[in-house]
Length: 192
Image (tube, rainbow, N blue to C red; front, side, top):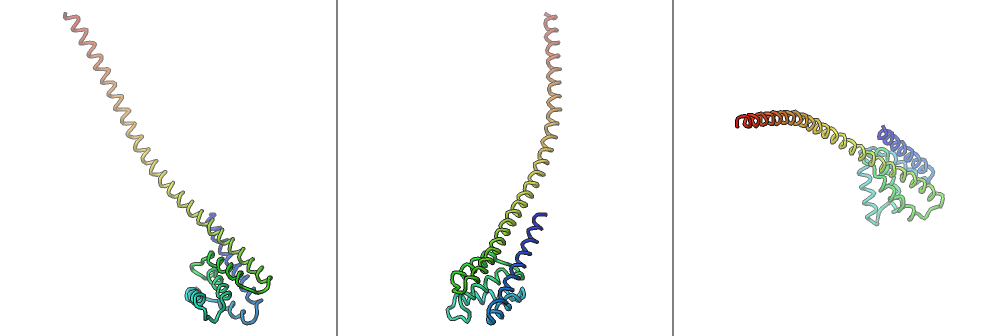
């Protein structure tokens, strides 16, 4: 139940994050509107190739995109709601680098700080989800172990009950042997 709740909450936060980025992209200069819109409207199958393109642009110095822009757009792609394998940690790191390199206005830096805080919440939710999954796995393992131990306990209880009966039979035999020994001793005394 909690796992489904956290998955829905994480998807909602990702969606809100992308919407905020989209709105922020619209508020930027005309040149950046096209770029932000382009990255936000990518389809699932295009995200991986565009991510590779931006990573290569960061490695090469003669890129058409500036380093801060590449970092910003990579953050968009790593946290894109259509990304089949989102990486919020990398998005967070890229936005941190972006804000340290971006010489623009303080208000835009505060906007990116806002995005960073959203990403941090996503990362924390992801960590919590992993803990829940690990706890769920541990619970499943403990349930399996409990079932196994119950079966072993049942088997041992059955063996114990058989041994108790066997022990009782042996005690009866010993008691009969004692009685027989007493009778033999009496006969021997009477015969002598």
